[in-house]
Image 1 (cartoon, rainbow, N blue to C red):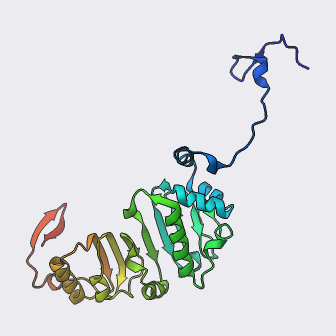
Image 2 (image 1 turned 90 degrees about the vertical axis):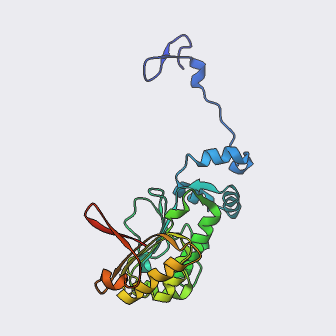
Image 3 (image 1 turned 45 degrees about the horizontal axis):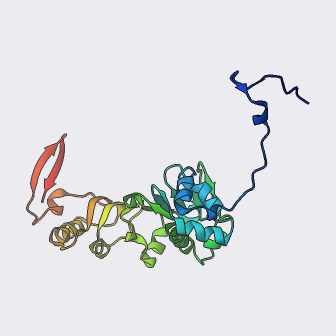
Length: 253
């Protein structure tokens, strides 16, 4: 037994009271008994994947987290076959909705969210996970919610009406999007369409519709087509003012 008169030093050479070395057992208590404000402060120190793993330990804990609704930066939805996943903020974790894990820094496997993915299709699972995440977290920046799709998955997105539900949408393969789909866009901050089947005539009609629309359709719109876009054809019948900015042609309408 140590001599009570012996000096005790800590790791940096400071004197430590011998009695302070004795640590009493602390009785544990449920997180949900704390005031909501204190719990929210505690959750802010946790990574989203840590919160999710804790929340899904019991149905009671899941209901508690959905009541608190901790704040996070954003969701990014990747819909791409068996690699489908939802990323929670930049480094907060990737929730695997498909069966093919992505090369992610932190992953929340399907087993953790099993109660959320009992749908008949991958898209149904993705929608279910996104809906539950929306009940559990409050994104600080809704503009960065992104739906990314590739390949034939777009057909499922088209049939479900899941396409333009997000204020920021990026489609890696947008050949399935038709002119009438663009007319339905409302109040989006950003749209990117790659590899579209839209023609110069389609783009001309779309721009005219956008100019005459009574409601805001989007803040930014980017598109590439399977055929070369020709400005003379796209802007036919539209009054524009062309200016040069950093050697790039810009048109005011």
